[in-house]
Length: 334
Image 1: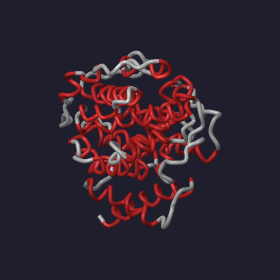
Image 2: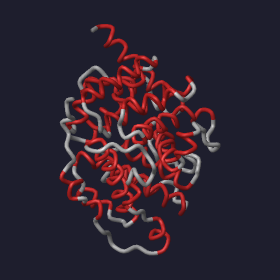
Image 3: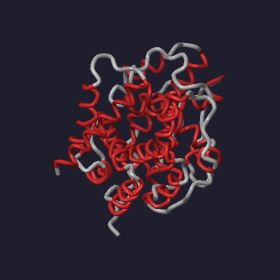
Image 4: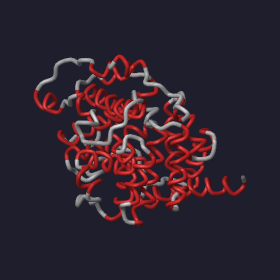
């Protein structure tokens, strides 16, 4: 079997996520998180040895590093994280800023400063992290925040779905429940976040991910596949053969375009953030059927097609649908 070209980074090997920050007191001290939260065994997730587990746990360790860095007012230390892991750290910072903004009723000031400053190349990650912050406080996504990007803010619902499913996997994965905090319009985007979580929950195993998705009602599976496509590309953990198996599973389920759309969104997020990690360069041609630049271009073209000031839930869903149509046109031509 071909091995994934991406190896655990030096950052992860040295486990620099264990770095200490300046002491904090009061509320911030209570909010700090332990690095052990990244341990899949602790969460009773499926375990696979080797790179799959390293990729998934490494992403969460970087998230926790960024979360604690922002809580300690040391977000600048995210630069210590290896470039390919930095997006996850900014996701954590986005979560921490959102938690602090909500608890102190500052109407998104910290989140806005993060997006306008050190995380300006990581808007996907920060908005996903904002959703994780809402979930940590059990607050409906986007309540009370006025300074997030008008369209990207819907990614907070995706992040909410990921975190809610992470902390309540028995219900969201085992029982396939939906949270009672969401409106009907939020549920599809919540499921995209749940799909990302399934990639972690099954430790990047395509067969096991597909089996999990098959247990959900047909009306939810398209969004789950979209989330899987994002995570399989953005986080990695599968080798080339396994990625091909993943496309086969999605195609057999009738949701190949949704898998490609999720991968295209991940390509766009990674390219915007800077250099493209090897595992992303490997995944996009398989999952999206195009080179990363082209796949990312689908999302950018779809965004332009929405016209002036897209901001509604319908606009966000159209953004995804236009991206899928771009994939379909490309596939028809070839």
